[in-house]
Image (cartoon, rainbow, N blue to C red; front, side, top):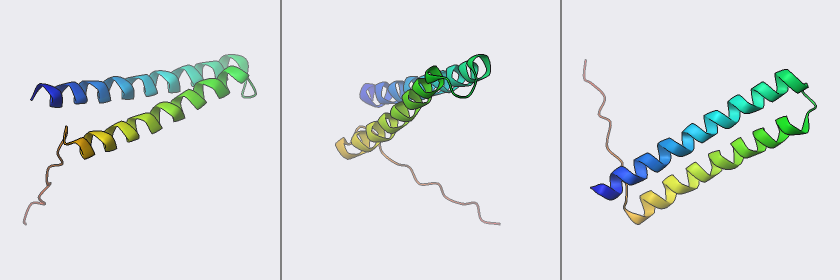
Length: 76
């Protein structure tokens, strides 16, 4: 159970870093202009972190650290 919690915390932290990188890229684009190398660096970091989150979720599922749960649609 503790491993499941740790995986969820890691995923939330990585997603928070993605949002921070997105905000930093937006701020640098507004402040420096769209052709700034800082903007490109922040957006590259965001893409890298997003891919890392996806890979981490896939590995966690493969290793059995997380399990999918079925979402059953309600019957009307």
